[in-house]
Length: 393
Image (cartoon, rainbow, N blue to C red; front, top):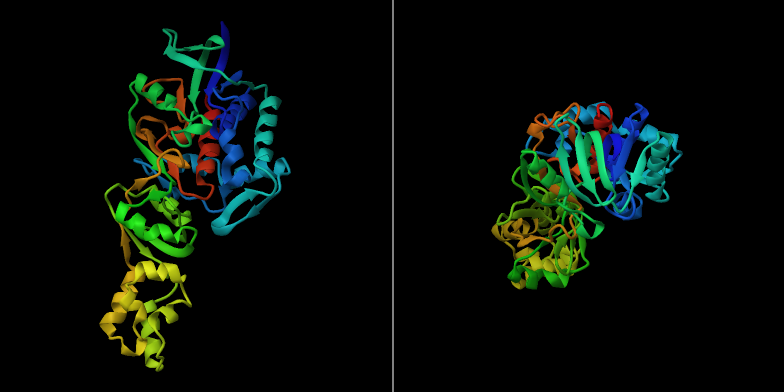
């Protein structure tokens, strides 16, 4: 039987980072991956350029049933620490909106750097490895039955990710292991995902497919000011993806399609200046004609501003800046970038990522109930949680 100090299940961002750190400590590390290649989500992320972190990382950028859990890891291995890794491997990168950092060339640069350090520290990676069972032995070690035979280790790290993008190999394996050992798993749902529309709304807004507008989308106490994109399936774009991680089915979103402008005041000013233009001609300066036709009535569009009362102008402004829409559903895990929910952090050490009730069993990355915003936050959680576990396994 093959014996390792540490077995890491999953060769994604968190798993590879953990493997490197454990390898640096002289641990004999073996990574088991069921796919035919390591780091598949790294390679596909950010349009192939990997949004690997963000200049601004705070606990408030994460969703968790235990909002304090992520603070320790993010503080101990920061975005600046990962940037040191990027610089060490001479990976060229650039900043986009909101502090998002991307590779200049290819996400493969990051994966190659991670794999290079794995080799440097003696980490072995087995691909196409199916795991049938994980058992804890009487001596405290773990026994894994796999397609490569029986393997034992002192510590097992679950770095299997969530349920998003099943075509990339996502499975509920990590959750099943947690439940097998009596560790609570919180309900999961798709996050950072486009939203579909109710049938009536779909008929009304599908003709807007392809239109993108800056907007402010609000749900309860959360709001994101980004672009929104109308698609043939519903609503997408950064603003919608961000709010989707908070949105609950059956609830409505509030959308302001002119977030930088008080359109009610602007229209009243135009009227005061003696303009006789129609509302549709005035608003065409700010928004696409097709969008105006969907959000306003024909009679509103045809009105001359000179003839509009304050009440009528306020109603027009409300239609544009307090547009209420109740999505039908999300597109689900098929197109979701992340999974919200997962292994309950209350049962995991925020310092070591080890289960409090099963010594030697660790959980890192997306399998945990920690979900970042769009913009490099989920990769930073992978690096930080993987690094922390790597100091202790």
